[in-house]
Image (cartoon, rainbow, N blue to C red; front, side, top):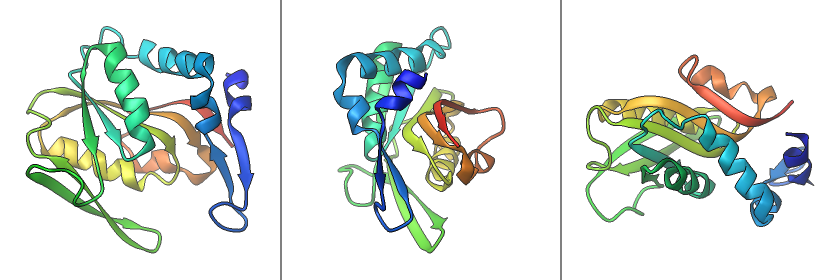
Length: 172
């Protein structure tokens, strides 16, 4: 995994001073690394009969769509308010300073469907916890929350269902 981690570039002081941003665009742009990352994530879920993969705006769309393709599943988008054209289910959740809202189409997940949630990075866990709540309220059966990378020092997995988190790469 160190070879994949080494491709992710650090951007110091972005988006603000003192933050070291993990820029995954370098891994996504490298065809062999991107393919390997998707294959490694997908391998975990082969045979689990995933019905839908939910990608969280915006980079989660990339991970989610690739996983859905590999698993023969449908892909569902979770977006910021006002971006989805049909009737939506909304979830407002707390951030460190304020709140945010996400939306999903009300007909995107049917009760009992096996749903895999996908995003690029697990940081504080607040966004994915909101998505877990939405999927469960819609009757979806949560397979797992999967991430390309996890910033373990932010303890985001503590906000997610125990035993339902998988991260391919971790940064301490």
